[in-house]
Image (tube, rainbow, N blue to C red):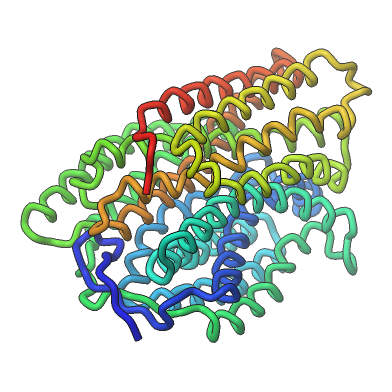
Length: 480
């Protein structure tokens, strides 16, 4: 048993207690498998939505809730999940989260109706929020030096790789129609994987927690959840439901709830309490800059994956399998790019993010021009591959480097709070990407046509990436 000075997600200094001193390869594989499951299920339904619509006779707004319910519950409960892991032990919460994810995946796969599926997806997002925060916190508590750098790079890469794998695997499973399960297989496949992760994780994942866990912040947790829900729910559902009064009222309430959350957290910090997210952490300029990097990265990524799936299936009339396999070229470059991040950081420091953003811009430009100018019948997977290869190369570096930059900016005494905040930014932006860029694409399609609407959506993402390149130039060149 070893101890090391660290912190929990509450942000107050504490002493970490770890089980085994080092996270072994099997343990790292297991926690990354959990992270992969949670990210994969955000995207796996994209290619299954047409089948769900036909089978369950789901309305378009209900289909969006299948995606949004998971995303909102996931984003809202992430910080609370991290706090619970600090208090009760990260291995225990990871295993609880894995078990709950398997059970809720089974509930999704057996859903008899559309609203049952929505409810099960909300519960599945809550299970993911229990599981995911323990992954980065365990890596931080049980690794050091170059081993930690490689583990964090792998963790960052998981989000992107899981998104691509989700659409490819989802397409393959829907097309295979295993034993007549159709779209249900995209959820049922999680059950044996979760069971295996549960069995291995109990032995291979080291435990860590804070010796003096922070007191609960009930009011802060409620206000934080309320503010995020009031923002994300109308953004994801407002357009498809015609912007009813409830969606407008929630959007108006979101900044007020955010202000109330900030006031409660500031008071808790001033009076020696345990704020869920310490306001002083956000006042660190380096922290704000590093977290701002996540906005164009994750909003752009989820918006692109959502819009591209619609373009392929509704515009080009690709089947689920063909649509899923079309994104494979992104993975072919994204995986090796992510693995090269430690080497790129040693050579270029944070300027690796700048170069990655520009490569990604080139990939979006090639993809957009291909969609605009190539004859509709000529838009084959092979024709789309060059742009996707460049996008994957840029994304691989961005996704893997984001967490390393974010954690390097956080003072050592607040690493737990910083990791929880970084994960919350990621998941919130993934939800907003589908809501903002996806809704923009769908809203423009009737008037401009699918080609032009998709190209304009890529243009917005491209502008965000140029902003990312400029912002990365303001970061300290060298990093720990």
